[in-house]
Image 1: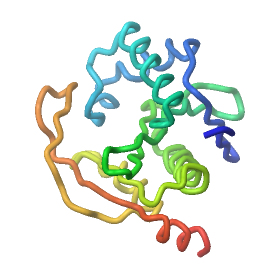
Image 2: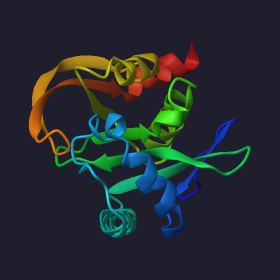
Image 3: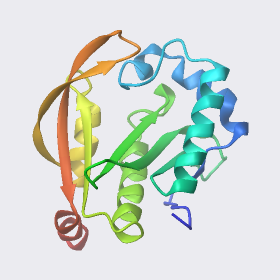
Length: 182
């Protein structure tokens, strides 16, 4: 992803060491962490540094593009959004936002920009994603983008230390283009 996506209210860019403080602070809210499969709670500076190294390696290898989501108005770090290539060739869309930034349309705005990049710049034929059964707001974001249900599966959630039912969804290039044209 050579150019970084931007929207009217958001700038999406690679994650940087300077994002550590807001990143760790926002993920240390259990209400955020419990909606993410692979995030420990509490979250530490060391975990952030490890994640930063992984995301930079994925970027260099062309298999993952994790973007810090910042507000265009003031540059505040508010969350993450990105895509990772799966073994089956599809790209997995994921995102999280700090609780102070929920219910403001940021997730939909960022996920739409990243989806557009995945289809237009990465040549993705389909995107997959999922949301935990008790996080319908995330499901609503994906529905607005045109994702369709493909089933459910149990996903281990590190912060909950238990498997959680995840609703799986998919968006094809054709469906995305139809929705964009509408």
